[in-house]
Image 1 (cartoon, rainbow, N blue to C red):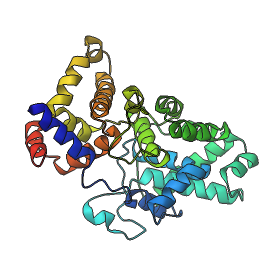
Image 2 (image 1 turned 120 degrees about the vertical axis):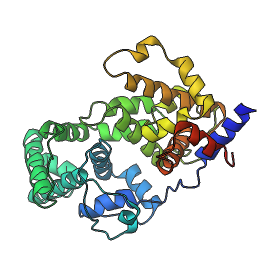
Image 3 (image 1 turned 60 degrees about the vertical axis):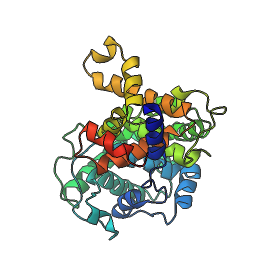
Length: 320
């Protein structure tokens, strides 16, 4: 009986009523504030992800600085949307980096990143871009602490090298082909993209690049290995709290843990990796999309952020 309840809960989260792939306010707010073109529809956004290397480069920059956890936020949004009225804020670091990117492109008269890389060496571009980012962050955005978490020109240099070497196109191809592990390994080479952010990138690109990414159900005959899907399951505090509140997932997670997972300098990363795989396996066995579960658990968790784990489970059982 409890397994049936848990399956109903998992299905409810996979098909959570707040999942809205057409809601582009978050990315549009960043782009507006960075004086870049926004997207009117999800189809337009997906098309840019699929065919525009320059936008995919911008996408990676935004995720690197937005998802990495910098604390400084803008006090208002240039696009005038209602995003801020609901308690959300656009972080200042991706905006300052993109504004600086625009300035450097204009200085060299480059319409594309390819042209910019033809005009100047990567080391020089990285230094100039970093200095502009710092200046914009402190003067135009009037924010402090831009460099307090170790951001420097080598961070930008790694992104420029990633694009110049053609790895940005490889990233798109690998996700399109369902090679999530290989895509994750590519991202691991980028400064500022760690395990959690890498999985965010893989997941959100898979929503845009795969035919099944947004679907509630998955075809297990086509997607046979849940280990591949685990690379698209980022774990943050909300996903973690909601997932472990579900006995089916929590019990499977405990079975998979070993002493080595609990030892070492940063055991939480190992546990989160096991949780990603556990979610992928449980959803895969039910022919449900674990990426949608991940997003649904996050949305539910943010709503119930003050609830205890046992309270979360009681809430999840309603209508399950």
